[in-house]
Image (cartoon, rainbow, N blue to C red; front, top):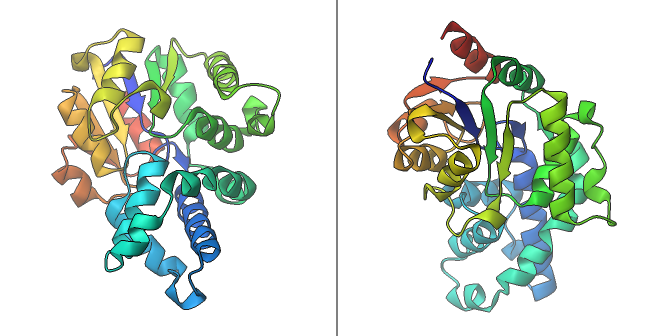
Length: 268
């Protein structure tokens, strides 16, 4: 591991446990929208049905995922699928998730220790996510209360860009990171499994693929890491996909937790 200079990590399902937030938030958003559209309760997906469809299509931006899950669940109703205003549907999502985030967002075990390790080891760090700056500020602010940014996402006096920079600066200082960048959906034109988000992170950190480790919980992270020709592509199983799925998608190593990742990195 002596050649690794930077870790580029996915956010949701990898560093921060937002799976319940994503599932419950998108389910409530879709059912609320379709109720307003006029669908009767018996035609709405219950939570388990929605989760099944979400698991099939999840990946990419929240907007694209919402569209994909509606089209998957209502594949036998093309007229309905064609009439949904997916931009309006997406506009409903943030208020729902903002309201329920304190209940559902948590840090994965060992997140703070992992960040302390990255700082003490001198490694560079990037978060590369299909989420927006607002999502990053909200989710990490709640998951890492020691940063003192728990309610920053509620601040209406600052732009999302300014709040994201405040989060980056605070995180870098608190954990003594050599360098820390965040790549969001606003920074790229293509989403994972396209390698652009990971390549953008490498460029910002001024590291080569040969010196980069990709960390993610979803098959799209593994595929994007492979396409970016990263030296190590580590799948973590506490998130979305299981060991077999991650290996099949290109993982070079599997860990079950952040403490296990740290222990492996410490062994060199």
